[in-house]
Length: 117
Image (spheres, rainbow, N blue to C red):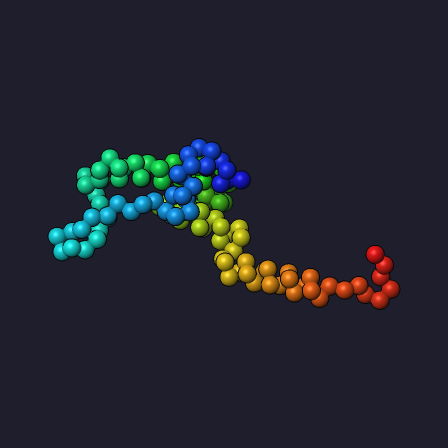
């Protein structure tokens, strides 16, 4: 549902939520990649961060105070989304374990003696 709302606002926003904002990085004097400062950002770099801010707004607007306290330290929309996914669905490993358990219960399902449909 949230996916549809965000895509409805701007299709590219969903990519930012799932993949993270494109990094705005530069090489320093030693040739090491470092984040750009605001002064170093181009108009394209600022557009990337504006899209991240829009995506964050869409994710945060529907949260309860308890949910908001979970994500308030997140800096990107991807961090917010990942935090909310883990809180509500569990990690991929937990999801696999739940699926395995449910499949096992289904396979072992049988009627007890004396039960009718």
